[in-house]
Image (cartoon, rainbow, N blue to C red; front, side):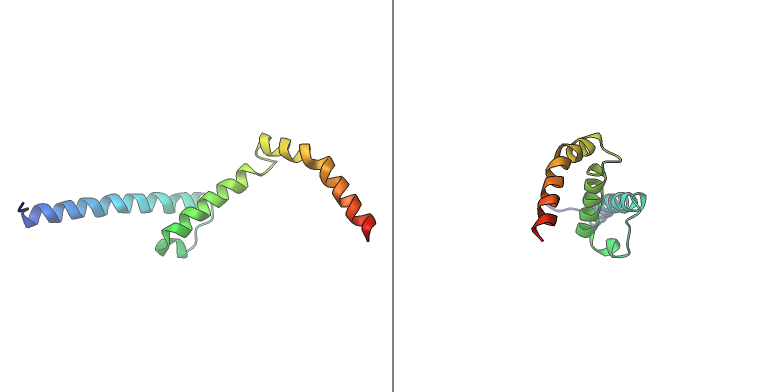
Length: 90
């Protein structure tokens, strides 16, 4: 099937514009999370990974997440026993 050059060029321009929207969205999220680095401009996988890691840290912060605080409080007595055992072992 023959496609006119103008149509192919327009399709390519449309595809590039869509990809730029994705890139800008990901970079904007990194900026909003205050984790942006110049490396993110050229390495999208690192940028996405850093964003995911940032959200995991926020979710596991007891000051932010009730579930994280409950998890911390549930295991606090167990950890204290482990620390006491370790201190007495020395």
